[in-house]
Image 1 (cartoon, helix red, strand yellow):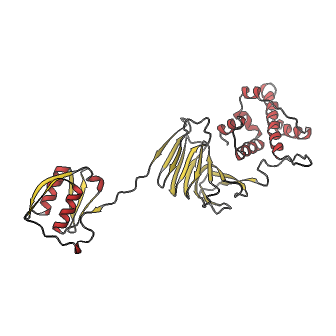
Image 2: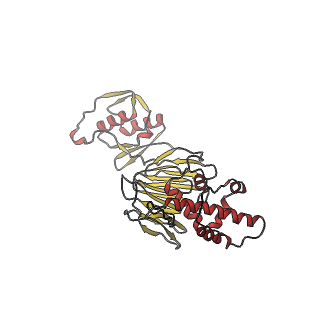
Image 3: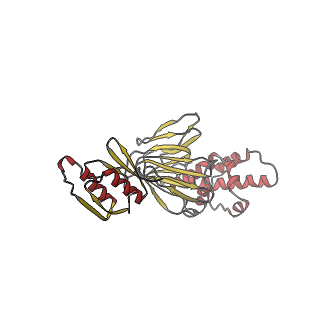
Length: 348
């Protein structure tokens, strides 16, 4: 199945060369599919403006008429479908016109010297596809990809996906790696990512595992969502094909626990004074000082004590546990003692 947006884009003459080839090949291989995409108004407005070789005209119409259309409206549709196919064939032939002797050569619709290849996974397990550039595609069940062979040609590498696949794209700064999945176009700026785009689903998902990718609407003219989003490892973009809008779930790296005090207390001997005070001091400074005074490890998560302060006077005879519990009570924290160390956490 080919996106309706791509077909509309073709008739507006806004397709790239590779997109044009994809549309032409699809309808050449599936002439009956025109009825799914072209309305009667489209038929009425379609004009074939070029002459076509009579022999080729008869062959194309024969392909359509074999579908045994009935009389009346369906018969009229068959003739119109043939007219459109003739127009498409003209375009293909003009692209393949040989300068010099004027010979028209019909081929598969691919760019000169290239053929469209397809890989389908009909099994119930992952299927590995190795592309010519060294890229690896792990194709999920009920999924398929299409691409031109040779794969490395021109200034980009393009894959058309239906279903789900994990891509591990080989680095090539001169040739971006692009994946078209229905209404989305994903351009690889890194290495590993997964695209999920099943025909029966209303959403398309792109998730990055390594490196980074850029995601945008495949048809920027018709799309409501016109942004270009950069995704980093762990990020996931979900595009709704009905609303034509996208949302991004950013990956938040797990926060690391911090140890208070000097990096190595063995070289940092401190004599605790008879009394000392804190005056609206950030808790990070307070814990650093207490860890140094009492020579005890104190651990905490920075976000748990962000924008929290403490004021108070301490005596040399006060125990660390008492001081920490007072601080925790005032700042809605919890104190856990483990193996001679203290762990500070936010209350939940």
